[in-house]
Image (cartoon, rainbow, N blue to C red; front, side, top):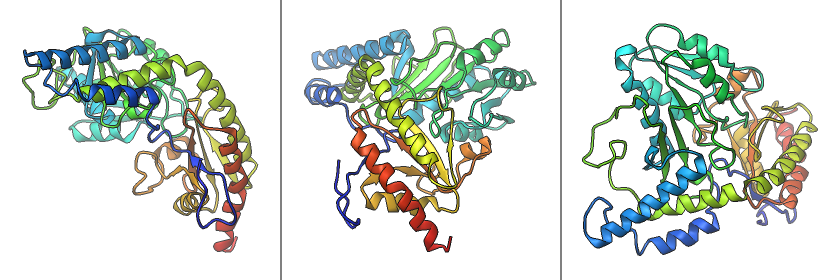
Length: 384
């Protein structure tokens, strides 16, 4: 917790942007420091330091596989969650090149998926969502039934509004079509169990309290996946370059710890988010978006009419509350959110609040105490 500078009186603030990056988990910190002295060598070499690094890397892969409910040989560490998304989606597409090149995806996918789809030629079909941000499995299957479809992409849960997608239903609807399913689980991995039915999936360590710069690519055994990028001489065809072994081991340690404490932390966070949802809804002309129940436990987004999102972020930051605004995946430009637009929700003056594992009731109550006055102050500045 911090004391805001420049605010009117002392204020209890907090870091409320864990969906962008969760603070490093103590388990990750401890493991990282220990592994730095042991995991520096190239795990592909044959000498003793390399064999030590390989043991650490294999251990990290086994832990991640156990936590995510998959096989160790289906796990590859990448340089980021974005890299894992690109490899997973485009690799499935490349594996189906003779069947077509079209990508079917929900209208609310992360920009990493949208950019990957736009990077390759061909038709790309965005499947609409309902007012809660949820896609219909039947709609995905209908879009995938068209000619030339190579792959379908459906996120596990939305990174901006928290709504959980019906991945199992989509997988069932696609069964027998031959169209593989890519699942972006970066926002949910560790926080929610990974729903089966995917052919490839992606996760990002810094979202669950691991170090930044570690992504996880999952490719199901038997899936038709082919590397869409220039190759490497690594044993694992999905890997490119030299893995950061200490960081991968630290990411695995954090994931293991997060999964072990998931039920307790999720229950506590969900109660705090319910409090934020109610408090934000009480602010005049404010819309709380996303499914109120079937959602990520730590995240809530709301939009305030007649308020600029950037001004709202700065005003809250001056009071010690670190939140996100704009599109969560294009926050540097603060462009209107394509997710909210697809839901038919208010796209400006939006705030995404996402709680860390250690978030307290005091931080939440302080945020809710400041929010109405901050919104009213910005509206007054423009004559409302």
